[in-house]
Length: 310
Image (cartoon, rainbow, N blue to C red; front, top):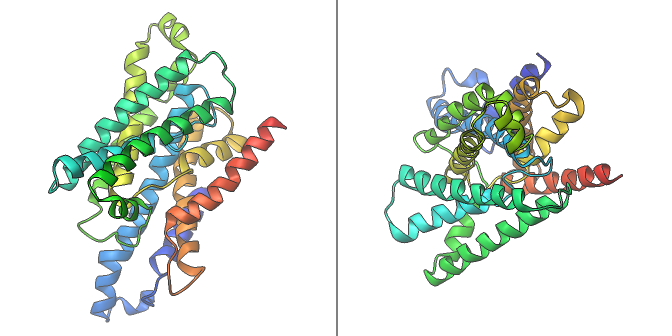
């Protein structure tokens, strides 16, 4: 109940924070401010909540399937694969629609996420820090390939600007793809126990009568959908899927069924907090949320690594 209250508080602050000064009492008699509220502030707040929730859950699924608490879309190459998918869509079909970019991004993310899980299964050293380092290297390779093709097609600057995580351009009619996150969240909750069993390993899952490959594919497809929707609507948002599940685990434990709702609320709260901070820290200018999340998430990531090693 406390998480719901905090989420409502941050959502209220988000709705009434911005360059355009809007007070709730003015919405009933100021048509211009009402239009800004309906077409910009509400879509932005909804997008923050849904992407924060979905990213946190996607991170939890990746950690279960890879059997490593430091794996997430940020440290497995999933975000870089999604960027590559969007880039290839723009190169091959310059006038591709939003849904077209989504399908390209989804396909590339799913393919390379499967490849990463295959890498993890072949690695004998199951060190908590070593596996994410492999994922970061994998993502760097994908990013280098994407940069090469972007350079050859003279769209490097456009791609870098477009993929920087930023919610300021979220408007009515341009964000509706984020609702695809909702079925992903439902699937994650429905398959929670199966993801846990799959995380125990192939032999363990098969001995219990499960189809290990099917469960892993469902999990990766869920993660890929969340990551792809996030990238095509607001750009790259790092660290949410890494930080939120680990922080929640410290207080709630490893029971996925119990921790999923907490992770969903915590992810939304974390993203709302970072966005609000970016809007007020250099007011009236705005820091893209990709920067604030990157700084805060990077610090927390180092803290988690040092805490684990200590």
